[in-house]
Length: 99
Length: 175
Image 1 (cartoon, chains in turn green, brown):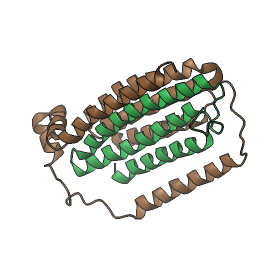
Image 2 (image 1 turned 30 degrees about the vertical axis):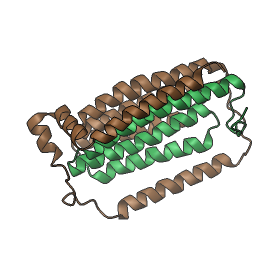
Image 3 (image 1 turned 180 degrees about the horizontal axis):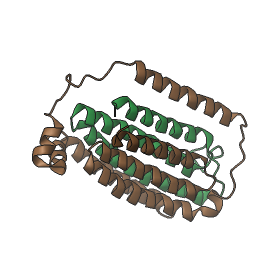
Image 4 (image 1 turned 90 degrees about the horizontal axis):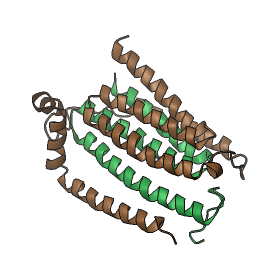
């Protein structure tokens, strides 16, 4: 398959993630859309790495994966503490950094 | 059409469809399961591209560990988080978001089709990957690249994980 085919799939997945962040009001689903965007970029990293016959792209995917894991841990902890202090979950209401 | 092309198109359609499921399902549990499906399809893409180690890590860490964490939080707040879609305060937001998404995918496709082609002779920094994979194996090639060219980022990653661990502890304790 040509490289551009993989890049097109990656672009479509990234756009789906962006649209999810824009249209959903549930913070958990917004978070999943961010994961979708990270994975779309990972796909283009792997495709380009395979096309260029170099391991560098796969290294970047590995590092992105660790950063994503750390991000999920901290982000979910923040969401849980927001859920604990206030019952409603609309992201439009949660616009202050203090209680 | 060769088998690789058929596999590619099936995977492409399936991954985009399950990605749409993530953002369109009402229930957050369904969205999380759909995201797991997308991650598995992406792992199959990685297998097709020859990145075996990345595919296995994707299944074990992403579809396994990270999504289990997600499902824990989703089910913890299932009653609040999923049953009804919250009403939109800005009614035209969805339409604008849809149009902007179409503009983004159009712009990205335009750039991909008209941009400069990647010249595979221009780079090849650390020797060719396929040669190392053929002589030593996939994991060996990955490990060599990780501990030779990327040793410092790898060590910084451990610091990042410690910081994330402490952050989750501080945020998660009873206030």
